[in-house]
Length: 592
Image (cartoon, rainbow, N blue to C red; front, top):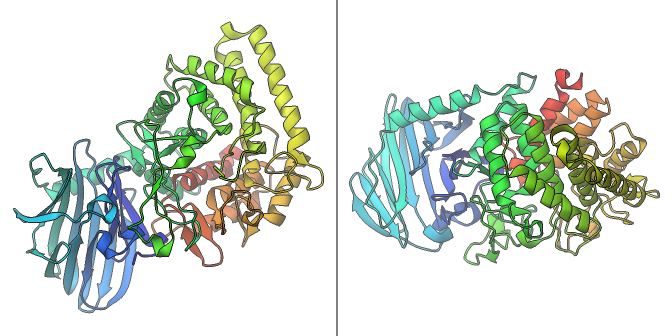
């Protein structure tokens, strides 16, 4: 059975990523891309669905899980009867290969070890043909092949290969897994020590570019490294998470595939990267955004594949039992077919921020923005599916209408600041439209009985998405309506001091069960405290959220305040983006 979600670390090569537990088991890897079929899927199944584990065969007294400095090189020190060993796990960056490299080093004494490789292509369905290869074994199934090789003797087993060996002080046992298309010849073995040095230097060079110098620098850098690990380098897309179907409730049905790129995250992504000084990565993401959102606005989706693909057909994998019995296991995401009004505000805000912050211009930006704005002018009064992709029917979601206002506001500012040729009647109309949307949201989105901006027009149900009102400039955090909304959120949506997206008992999303506290929303509440001058409360909540990270500094999508566990897909880009933004909001130089 898989380990607790928060016990995993991520390694990656900017094309895909693997999750390795503190117990030394690689339980998740999709090769060669984030959205490829998994060849190790024990994370959402059992050992038989694919894992690569390296562990002592004697009792373990202590494990220490950490990253090597500001890198994505994972180190796990294990103290056990007889001695101490250290695992070093990493994926060397490459645009042509997909490799996982693992080193077992003897630190003290002598430790007997076991290595088991059970590879199952196609999300645990396809048992490979296993044949001997130089230094190890080759696994072949349909279009996929992989070699496991290293400096220890391996033998075939019922499900894969195994090896038994001892590691003494000073020993370094090197192992490598090399995935490749089965129709191509075996890739040459890598020089693991050289790749370790190269990978280490690459990450140190990248991390050193961070311009944030505030109090929470370590947390910000780790979150930035995590975002880099979630980046598909060939296109600049950033996946929401590298996993699918990790549950929002243990044993529940809210299990979704997050290996795609959401337009919802566009503004946060650009802001986080630009605030930290990562212009190249922000530019690559902005360019992906322009390509993905091109075409007629009516065809714009809320999410896309990492290469900009649109067809993300959702289906269930019935062969997998799900993480701790949480079914169904989903591949693809049917929410890609939803209509979400807020994505237009996200895209236009991102394009405005990019221009405002001096990023290199793109000729396509203005035509795309203009076409989107014309479409928003036609559809902003329609109900939509909302930011949380609820499957309980369309409504006039308050957050969606606010983001329609953002779309108009940012295009107005774009004209005023950068493109005066579009002034005149166009600008006059847009200013009037901006005021009209603002007035409607204030009248219909704010519920006088609840004394808060609620989830949708006329509803009494609260929704944490309205905490973004000060972020986008719709109203200041000091506005009495915003402050009363924050009080209502505190009274209704807080669980053990953390924020729910909405109260699931109202069944607004059409699904049974519940979910945990949504970590990004909890960061948004801290932001509201900071914006309103409630600095101590903001810092206390921020520190509480930092304490929920695992020992590696990683966050999932949600936190279960009853079970005291991280839940949801992991690590979650949205959570780490929000962390970076809050750290900047709390920095003294930004408050000034």
